[in-house]
Image (cartoon, rainbow, N blue to C red; front, side):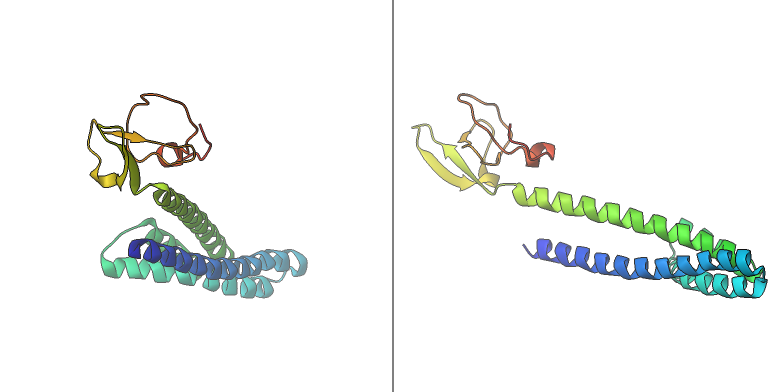
Length: 190
């Protein structure tokens, strides 16, 4: 149960960080987009460079920070290469390119994070469906509720309509509808 609470808090914290990063990314992306508009409307590089530099710094800061953290920890990822590309573009004065590179990298990271969080939440909900108790049918035909973990091969269990399946097995008699979500991932009764 403690693991479940920790996982839920971890998901909530990651979602909060992703929301802040999304807002900063949209603001930085808007600044870079405005730099293209300023370049087109005013045809003055000072306006467009100012917008682009602000956007590139806002978008590049998380990438460079993340890359630096990974380097200090001794891990190499593609973030380091992207951070080098962003920094190099800023150094040579290509602020719009730096902003565009950083923008698309952060957007892809946010999409990846969102996908992973959704998958983690789905797996967590399936774990909650796994039953901890089973209805064991004794040799005398009596039904006894036992811990699912204590079931052994060859034992007979009864699965009532709507029950989750507590163990692998073969249907010996009868028919019913059961929730197969913990087996197939689909929650349609079969």
